[in-house]
Amino acid sequence: MNTANDLVARGAQRHKQGKVQEAEGLYRRALKLNPNHPDAHNLLSVALRARGAVAEALAASTRAVALAPGHPLMLANHGAALAEAGQLPEAITAMQQCLALAPGDATTWRNLGQALAAAGRPADAVGPLTTATQLAPAMAEAWLALAHAQRESGNAFAARAPAARALELSGRDKGMAEQARFLLAALGEAETPDRAPAAYVRQLFDTFAPRFDAELEGKLDYRTPALLAEALLAAGIPAEGVLDVLDLGCGTGLSGVALAPFARRLEGVDLSPRMLEAARARNLYAALHEMDLLAFLPRKPAAWDIIAAADVLNYLGDLAPVLAAMRAALRPGGTIAFSLETGEAVPFALGEGMRYRHNPAHVLGLAEAAGLNLLAQTPVTLRQERGQPVAGALLLLRC
Image (tube, rainbow, N blue to C red; front, side, top):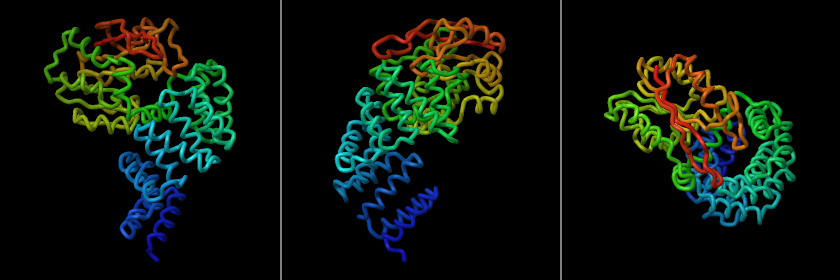
């Protein structure tokens, strides 16, 4: 039979099998038969979230809650959809309403903690995340989130045990293990890797994407893209729209706004699909690529007049591979412009903020080895963090 209930049941079965696209189609068919089926709207929202259709997922979860008010399952998913859309106060309220009705829902306790941390309330997140680990002791994601909340609330010592527990529970989940080791390294409890795990960077910026521009330009006084553009102009590089420009780690396109005046053709690369979605909406880029920068650069040798990286290389420790890759992707006489978080450690250090600080003198040695010459070096304050200035440097290199 093809009743709405039957189609929803079949969709849920496909969903459990990982056939999300098929499940989505069945939920949509169910809604054609019964537009007021709350389970179909709710499960459609889950499927849409899985493929990153955030706005549509939120609309579906909103409809599900309207059709079944006070249903904890609907509230739980609606809270998750709100969080993914960056509506954190509303997400927190929905999750709290869910937990008042279903206090044994470990996943929603975890989601609540992560939403509180994302809202700048990491100390408040510790309680819900602790509850999640008590209800589901084998949930590695909850332990890792608890470790991050402890770290972000200034209690690095308390972060160590849950980070170690997340690593123990990661099993065959390579991404989870890499993220746990990376956090332990930032806490001084493991060997520092050469770079941040791609899964960590992708998740970090996917989560941050809806509020990225407002927080960086507002709360954090972020000006790195504009400062890089000023440095290019000061170096005599014309903003006349005649150059081929690559924006590495383009994010939401804030850097693209600063680079566009230089570009005949502007392309962007980023790991985060949700950041790229925001960048695409600016209509600045001729092409956007969801890819690791070290995988992308070799694909276009000698293709660019400018390669820019605003606050990107602080997620890489060993800069030798990326400098060599940028050099190979640059045209003769082209320019590389990037920012660094600076420190005295040689060659680099991983801080509790989960970013690398580099010694500029060491970086210049790597640049010379890659066949790049220093064009300009400027000490700057990159942004504010916890009320303190983040020291950095802008470097312009030319081949």
